[in-house]
Amino acid sequence: MAKERSEKGAAAVEFALVVPLLLLLLIGIIEFGRVYNAQIELSGAVREGARTMAIHNDPAAARAATRQGAPSLNPALTDGQIAVSSGGSPCTVVVTASYPMNFLTGLFGSTVDLTGKSTMQCGG
Image 1 (tube, helix red, strand yellow):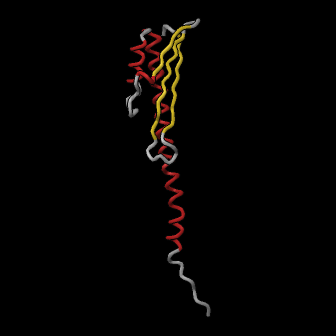
Image 2 (spheres, rainbow, N blue to C red):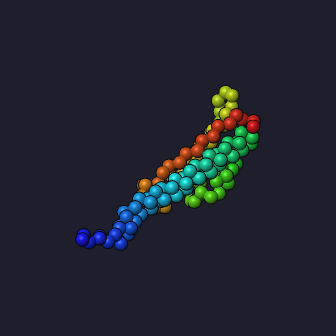
Image 3 (cartoon, rainbow, N blue to C red):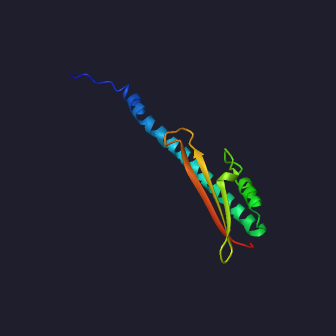
């Protein structure tokens, strides 16, 4: 009669093989969600800045509106990251902001550069 082989440790070995892949997938989902959220917030912020510039024609107010439109970006946007321009025929306003997003884990690099751009006609 043949001896039956014990499979007591098989589940532990399979678990040890699968866990790193599942953790990498989970970390990737978290990092992607953070970057996507920051990009959406940055796009909304530059839209607010372009709207302010189109109505008031004040670059300082447009930069302030852009900074206030992205309160959860950490570190916060600075004036050096926000570009405001106007001109052309018909008059258009362009607000662009660039933001270096830091990853939490560093598994996918250290940062990714996000850019938001919005264009509106002058006068609202």
